[in-house]
Image 1 (tube, rainbow, N blue to C red):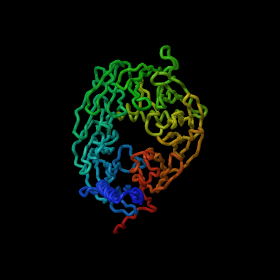
Image 2 (image 1 turned 45 degrees about the horizontal axis):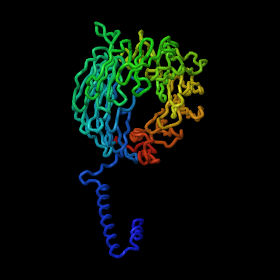
Image 3 (image 1 turned 30 degrees about the vertical axis):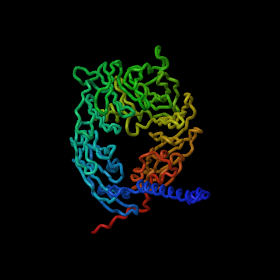
Length: 593
């Protein structure tokens, strides 16, 4: 309508011949625009658009099976699954759903079934419900990954030291065609490698053996990779923030080749080619390489100090002592460095005692200057009675178990001599004795001290801004999604909402026994899931936004590939549609008796 009115106005006061010419010109232009629109809007006839997936997967425990049901909750297909593998320490409560992922299009569902003697990957269509293909993989596989273009599917795992089956203890990688599941190749790396990581930026699998003396850079598109001998024992291996380089501190070995001795080098490898790019032998006193806070902030830990390392692996001038005061280096940490986070241009470090327990102090350091700007007390000393010893015993037990399995290095044991076991790095309840989060404006650090049952808020100038008593019941964690203002204390029986603007508790969301909290950082949401349903909460507003069926949580998370804040539309429900919740149990067909 608007275009017709414009034509009339433009031709009202011109001669007839000009009118005809103008109309012809507009007519021709309209034909050209129509043709262009037809070319850009109509799909090619030989490549019709694929229908959107509409089936959801549900895993049944007894008997082990997979059900695919549609939006009306009608079961359209059911498939039996392998009985879950058991170990020497099997607990029924620890069993969970099989490992499963979808392909980049969301049309295929891959399910990894781990049995006692074999493991298998199956592919199912989320459009038709049909079983597409299956393939046997290494029994040690516990992870599924699809490469960038979705053409390859990888199944891999570090192995299970407690398994009675030898093949389940040996780490292996199996690479398959993502559509047919035809195995292209499989490579084994021995028992319990100290590192097994897929780097998607370079499409490489980086593996380091159990002894930390051999490394592989596997290209899934090429085939098996040859081992690279490091010439010593690796003490700290880090992938750069861009995924292009790998840095590792290699210590010299004794004559027997089993013990690290003084001296060594910091090596840098190209992950794509496996070629060594750079080596520095100027860090002979270094005991371990660590990433401090994130990004490309590298430091080496020594016996009495820590020193910054450049992104290329050369020593930097910035050095900080562990002592309270050092004659040459000045103010120190007054303890050992523990977990760390970036706070603007500085690093917040939780300080540990020499025995690895919490020192209840937070250090703010300037990494470029190598200067400790502040040391702040964390928690209330008067309420720590009887808790540290109990948790320390748990930490030691877990450390000993992981060391027996050959994973002490990855467990976070200290490089000092004698070895130090650090509770805050260990899995299980002991790993959440302490936790940190940073406010959105990077002006406050929130430190949870479960031994003191509170959260301490430290301002950017090192001032203790507030202490909020919050029950942790042995362990908890702090969480702030990237686009949310609120900081969340996630405990065993409640989620506490902290408002950084006032440094006060804004809300407390209790939940009953049997309900679990699921943090969905990609959507700035969290879920409280009971046996039948999940309540979805918006982390930006701390408000409940919807309730979905428990069986549809995986389908909901499948739409959370990108943060909601990156969507241009304010209503992200159109960009990432939520599944229709089943009001009742899926409608299964009655079995004949």
